Image 1 (tube, rainbow, N blue to C red):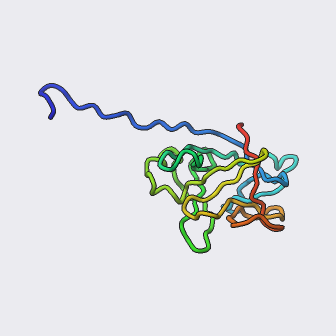
Image 2: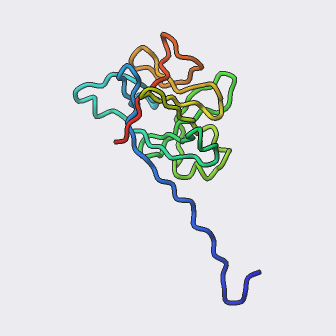
Length: 162
């Protein structure tokens, strides 16, 4: 009950630190935007400036041991999403990376679990377990999702603080 003359204090909003990283696949292909799609390709010379930095925040709505994060580009205003589906796809959606963690488990489509082995990272979709971010073995193809690494799908990435 509120005493006269005293207002209830609201807890401060959860502050989320946004991290800026570089991400590239094991074949040294960087990420960049082409025709509103995130693609991976070798960028040389003046084209190196096209590389997209990846912004990420932790998502505390999921088990911390699985290293859940939300990934975005363009200062975190466009986020990677993988809505639940039998054949999931990867999309770029306009969303504020700082706001998404407040949605709790409803942010699953935007959440990826990181795993690390031998200097390489993998990113598994929280909404589509067993599906991982991937690049094509061919250059300048869209970033996508795959269940297994094979001759055409690369699931391993370098992930480095800028």
